[in-house]
Image 1 (cartoon, helix red, strand yellow):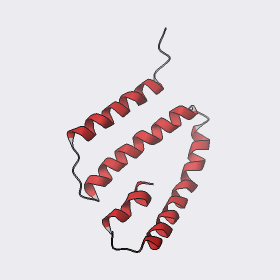
Image 2 (cartoon, helix red, strand yellow):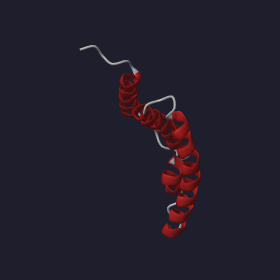
Image 3 (cartoon, one colour):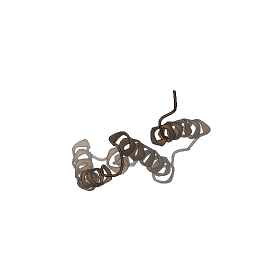
Image 4 (tube, rainbow, N blue to C red):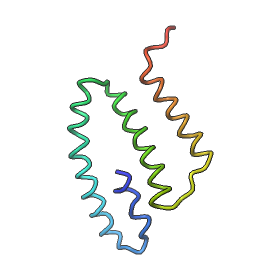
Length: 99
């Protein structure tokens, strides 16, 4: 989804309709993979765990994509923010905290 949503930013001169149609084609292919993966994964993981995994993977892919493809800088603020999101993921997978 990262490429479908952000790949066109490298080519701002392309017609918007063409970008939309290409993005939808890429997204459709990814959804065709994601839906069965979620169905299979749900046999092992809770829905919240599946969503957290998806978000962490998306953030990792996005960080690499923005640096390598779009040529943007990855700053310490990004690292801190992503680390906090990963800390949240840790607690989703951790056994319930005793109260």
